[in-house]
Image (cartoon, rainbow, N blue to C red; front, side, top):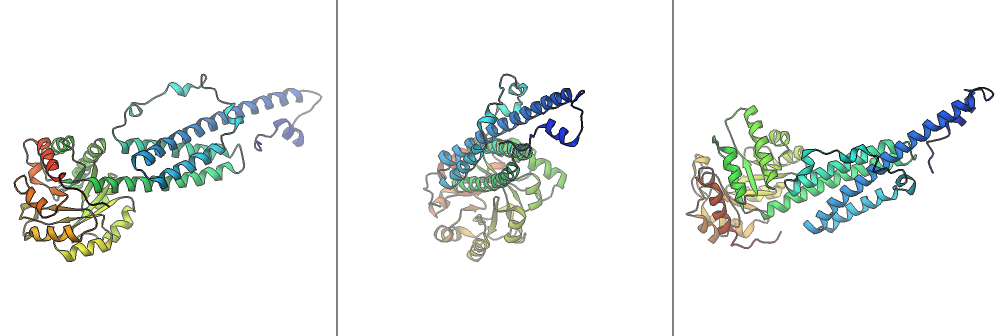
Length: 379
């Protein structure tokens, strides 16, 4: 029962705002007519946004169910969808006027294309959250409890988004076999895109000497590229830059921020990696909550000047003792990758062998063809 749209004529009568013997009836009729028009507009707004919220939640639910096989996330979507549906009364549905809605023909180029599952999910989370905010505000005109109900649902959707996007990132991290760490080059974006076309799913932007304006510009372009191809984008060292460009995570060296501090800044949904050179550093990184680690440098490399090679022995140790994803790194190329595989590596990270390659797409495909012969250990 609508408790907000009380009779305007009754209110006027109680306040003594008109004289029944003169023009009071005319005023009453006009006020009542205006009230009904506003009521129908509010009903149409509620109907449209209830539809929008339910549709968006169903799209998200289908990916949780069939894409991730995650019953918990799918169940939360379903519960939210059913709660929204309880408010979709016949009274609101009856106000629908699809043919008379000028918004049905409106569109935007970004709505015509979804570059990846990530972009599809993010678009629909935005759609649901916007609809819930509209329902929260306009619902206050319809029912005394509707605003508060949709406010709580909106917070639940925020939590669902964090949990789902975090789960997505961890799933892709576990599946990733090849990790490209960039080095400065005039053809940075072209090389990265070529590797992405070859199947790369994990990229780290690493540039130690450029000024922050340039780093921000390049990181933004690389993140867009990665998300277009459905790959993870990690920033080296800089938590602030990772947050500024909405990166999937950050990679920290032994002298960088403690993992606990980075986690507090980044939240639980983003990834944190840590470089390690020996078993002690590995165990410390795992205990501190790293999502993945680098193992190396396996061979001496100019990207780690002054660091002695950890050698294949550390790779063998990691293969037996590391329960989180780890990437062998340091001087790895097409000539020695099979030695890494023989030592137990399931994932490798490379720099020069891809950044300096004449055909990055083919080199990426070659690395993947070799490393994917190894069966991944279950999560």
